[in-house]
Length: 377
Image 1: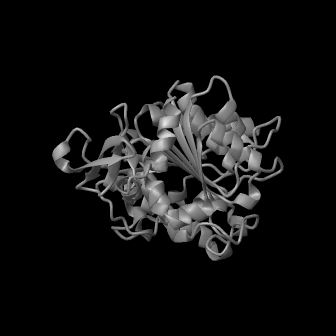
Image 2: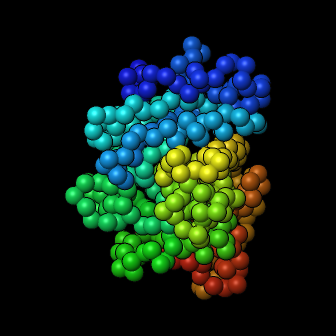
Image 3: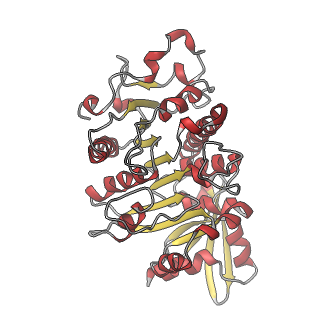
């Protein structure tokens, strides 16, 4: 990888702490940081990148220290996943303009992607998701994206903002969006026609109540995902008190961690971002603590992905032959992780859940089956 030091702030978070600050099994004693002599991009499985840019939400906003507040709590956590190598590249340097910061972030993410590493972006406003997407666009790779957010950011504006970036992602040309899923939107904040538009495009959207009722059904969604973006507004205010513009309803802290763990388990995911956190509004750093736990669970999920068998290794799966409504299909259940796959008429296998198997076993058509069939037309 090329030298990217010019895109990062000179001082790294780790330099504000003495080497003896962390115990041997804490993250702070095990993460490789860009300012350390032992740092090597090629050694990393996951690369953390901080970006405190908020001008996409408010053009007068100052650069945030939020990524380092998250690190303050993340580095104190116990490091259970010694087989996974994590590097912390530091914080993107603030550009003179918003466009400068975005360009720097994009360059860094492109290098991480080209090196076959997983990028984990923390901090800043939600419009930075567009830089995650642009990595795939620049590489001319089709991308499956998922976003967790209480809002569906499809406003029409001249400039890309945290309320309009999805419009450019989903409708811009040339377009490399193979599929899009929106997780945990709140109906009273979503315009009905907005949902009609997503449905016509064969995209999927999951209301907050449905996600909370059957959160395990989100695992197959994230298993197919290349890019995952999590806006902290998806979490209810009581669990993330930095969400001063959030909602009394939303995901619980546990559910947020469950979703990031599912994302970590995905063999296809190469880019995850956690956005919408401003430390200046955070009571007792509770939201930062939650984000650090979400990151811990993401890494925990990554450990699972490394143990999953390939679908061609049929001895590692339990095979179920199911007939429903004149269709004969096959469900596979992994002996290693208990995850499920479903065979489509074109003989391809798609991720599914145990609930899909139960529906098919009751001679009904799983909704996931129908949606996959619609997208093939």
